[in-house]
Length: 169
Length: 355
Image (cartoon, rainbow over all chains, first blue to last red; front, side):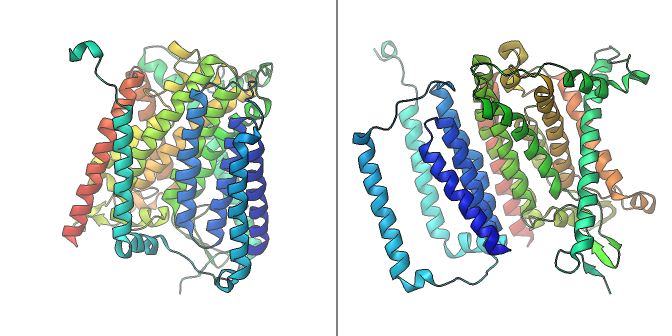
């Protein structure tokens, strides 16, 4: 039952991601990506981590992808106006990078015995995750949150409206 | 000895049967409430503005929802020539479905014993119930955004863009207000939260239940306001502001697809009212711990609370004008978010001190 679900979800996830990167229309691509994230969240749930699954949906599918849609709409791409097709000068490096990354991952999986070992079923309760995040790894969480704070302050500084030229004189 | 909890493993036949019954009953109650919420809203606002509201179909317009349904059903189902077909067709469903599946985690009564098994009066007791609600509340936005974008119309697109910004801003504050609740409850399961609210108030007052609205009044107010903003109800119905955007994201829709948007709006209202009732007003538990009240079945109390909150939302619509867009953003980021954060900090401090 669980393994059947795993394969179904895996198939959905891969197909959605594949469709996401092949669509010309950015809005369609975003929708496929949302589908992919949703399948990923279900996969987390299946693997015994309901909290991570909920975060996946709330943060990625619910917030970040909405921001993507917001940006696409701000750019004003109407449904029928399709952007230009793939440009190999621009896409070459990306393809090279991602294919080498893929090769590395495959190599790692086939070579490293620890990576092929089957992990036993484990149920990650929300409380446990919380205690791990804010107890054992509290320092790391704080450092990351400070980085986010710096990033948002930086974005605010870059995006703030400057006083007009005539006011300064 | 308490009987075993019914599950798929110990008795699949009964489990599936009971689950089907629960699903159908809950769906029917929600859909009927949606239909009559439209009638109630027109009646309530009508009387508040010294009008009568619908009067012609049935006694005091009681058959109005069905008349509306039949009328919309026979309207021409129109798709604009330049629209993106599939998202255009999917959008109304994508807004209604998240609203309906959120109801699955709302408990509507205590466990009952049937066929020798203990059966919870809830479709699914997810141990991450609250987060599940937040997750699906966040997904409802796709319906609005896609409707706005796929219609390929300026007004609809503006409605969609507004909806995205509004949802992102208010989802944050809504999530933070809920954090204060589960700092007190120490569980994410809605069933657990309701059970905790049935205890005595602060452990002293024996006949008043420990509803979180008494311990978290600020969170309750913030949640109601952010909830209204999240479901685009007046005074926050910017995405469909008819005075500026014709009808916003649903401008190009007609017939049953338009009706689906309306149903989604009322279904969302029911969901927000049910979540507020469950998190802050004790869910299905009685308002006073006395025998006459606790004898009344749980779903009656839950429905009463939900309908009172919905009446309050309709009252708001009759009272307040729509806010301006910059006011909406300012309220979200400069008032709601800091207040919610402060509430989390204070709750945390008090919880630590009381330990």
